[in-house]
Length: 315
Ligand SMILES: NC(=O)c1ccc[n+]([C@@H]2O[C@H](COP(=O)([O-])OP(=O)(O)OC[C@H]3O[C@@H](n4cnc5c(N)ncnc54)[C@H](OP(=O)(O)O)[C@@H]3O)[C@@H](O)[C@H]2O)c1
Image (cartoon, rainbow, N blue to C red; front, side, top):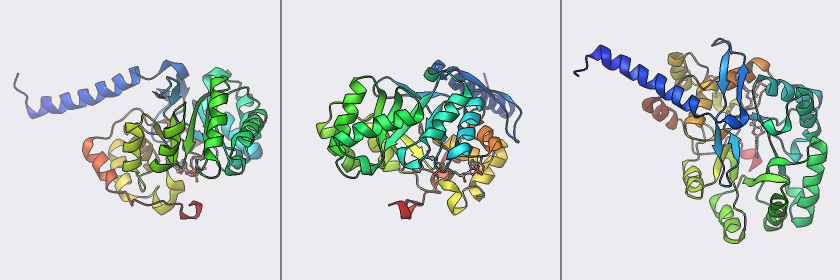
């Protein structure tokens, strides 16, 4: 059949709608399909949070909730609100000083434990075999949980191999569903890969439109390790929320810069854990599964890469 420009347009739209539907159908049942409230830019609807499969078969939501700086009663409320809105992956760390608040938020939400995916991290002060084992128990106690879904070495400092051995044992005992690292460069990961008996499942690193980490991403793909993006908005630095390229793409899709950023992560297969203490932003950040960035739009975002960290003070 000969296509007129009109039928071509319709077919392309149909194609996009079908692919969005298909990816929605592929959305993983493990974490269920959650009702959420719409953002200011879109009405309320059902969305599903897709999960990725880690190299040990464990499923992890591709979009989650970060909790840095969310401490005390604010942290508790944010975690509980986030879960109510549909978030299932919650990211914390010993150094955030909020594991008790996160645990209280989980409890307050009333959700069944197995529906959640909870991550924590061992801080550098607790590196080494014995200290990591102890730090893990402390984290679990503070969180009020009896297992973690993911436990990460927060930074590649100190006795990393000792920590890894402790984590492998905890994993084999079933106390952690998956183990991984954070802020590791390829050469540091290589050192673990050379001697480990359990491969890291995840590397959580700074990744956003201004620091896209293509080489690290490629390396991780080659080793079947998932990239999880911390600070997916670069905490708004460098004008992320007002950036004109993101805004021009957003205008076309009736989405905000935040949503365009998160969609860009999602289409690259990257797990993202945006943080917000604003309930409307929580809903907005979940509302990224009903549109698609085309190749040109992905290329426009690729050009925003500044190839350097936006957090030099943390290096
Ligand atoms: N492994 C590591 O070393 C490491 C390092 C840093 C972070 N992390 C993890 O990654 C998570 C995310 O990173 P992050 O907390 O540094 O920052 P982020 O998620 O990049 O940005 C958080 C900032 O974005 C704002 N925001 C969120 N949604 C928004 C929206 N829709 N519109 C406008 N503003 C919005 C928030 O303000 P409002 O509260 O006003 O919305 C907040 O100021 C952390 O919470 C933590 O769990 C890990």
